[in-house]
Image (cartoon, rainbow, N blue to C red; front, side, top):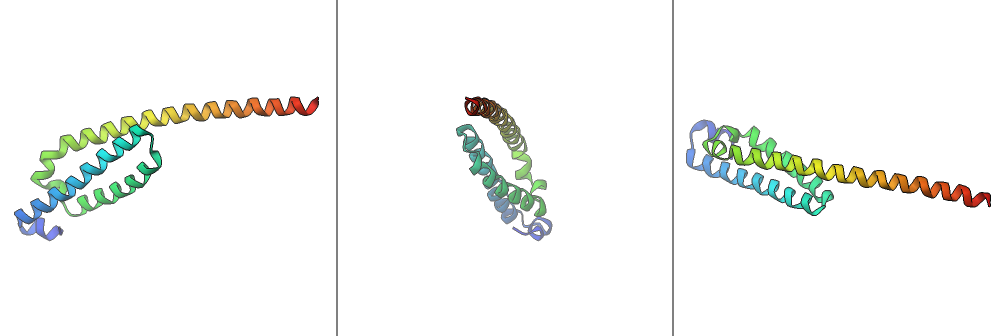
Length: 118
């Protein structure tokens, strides 16, 4: 879809293109949510780059001003909010694991120092 379609008043084609882009965006957000819940954070990073590019395209083409976008706004916002919350929770879990690893490394360093002395 081109911005000209939206501006020139080609509602059928513009609406179909808006639906397609928004379907893709919603699908990417749902997939990221599933992956975060499964702990597959490395894949999520890649999908976030794709999502960022798609959001830029949606913005550039003016899809955010279409009736289709307005119909989906609340659902997309809810998906973004849920993804943010789940990512924050995952980060907290990872931070906790990192803290445990650091504590384990300190204990091992203490063991090494004490073993070398004997």
